[in-house]
Amino acid sequence: MKSAPRVVGLSVLLGTTLAISACSDPEQSANNDNLATDVDSSAEVLPDDNTTLSNTSTQSENTKLSADDEMINTLIRYRWVLVDALDDKGQPLLSLIDVKEQVTTSFNQRQSKNTLNYSVGCNTISAGYELKGDTLAIDNSMSTKMSCKDLDLVENRLNALMQGVSQVEFIDNEDSPTLTQTTDNAVTLFWRGKLTAKAKYGSKGETVFWAIDAQSTPCTSDSKQMCLQVRPIVYNDQGIKVHEGKRVAFAGRIDGYEHDENFEQVLRMHRYPLNPSNKLNSGNDQDSTQKDAKNNVQDSNLESSSDDYAYVLDTIVEQTSVQ
Image (cartoon, rainbow, N blue to C red; front, top):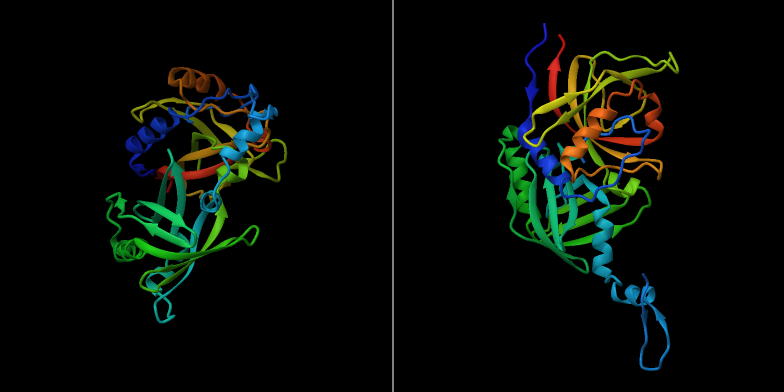
């Protein structure tokens, strides 16, 4: 017998997703898109000596980034995961090390404001920051208010360490850059960067929702390969499901997702085009997006879509046991 579904803040989650997607810049989805859903003149300058300069070169000079801004742009490209933590005597900080795989931080820049998000796997803590040379100054933080139970003490510890002034060192090790952060009380945090999906795929993607059946089936194109059975879902601004597509096969991979045949799940994902000719909807026109989604999620087979798009798991918003 199936148990009742566990929903993780779905109404709030979806409302936030759709509000964000409504502010992005729309682009038309490709006609062969199997999973469209809502989501998400050069002038001349004449100087005094009458020499003609192109507007491009003038803009380049005016927009040349400082070394600090270039470093911020580099840090923004990665999601940073904790790999080690040492106290002021060089001893391991076991409380953080024990959960290091889920201790993360990310640098952001919105409307010319620098913000930092960090977490131990429960609440998301946000703060403004300033980077000058190798000095990182982090302001007082704000946080969501979920109870973290066993993680409460670890979360408080990380929050205390992150605020204030730190010395940072960035080392670009190609696919695995490192960031060493030494806090004002001599605690050293070692972070490893993983390229964000936006940086990797060159776009911010769009948000899509899929219901995933517990049971996968052999793919029609290759019976030795198993395909997920998925149903695209459309929600309105209030987080209420307004449409569910037909069950179709998906042969691709969802980055960050491990399928468990003990559960039926609803996933929120970000989708990125691998083919430059495939453009994404951002959702500025919600009515149009909803209509397009209803028209396009009816396609009968998604096995080929894995070659056109990359899918990255954002969160599991609903999970139902099949046992």
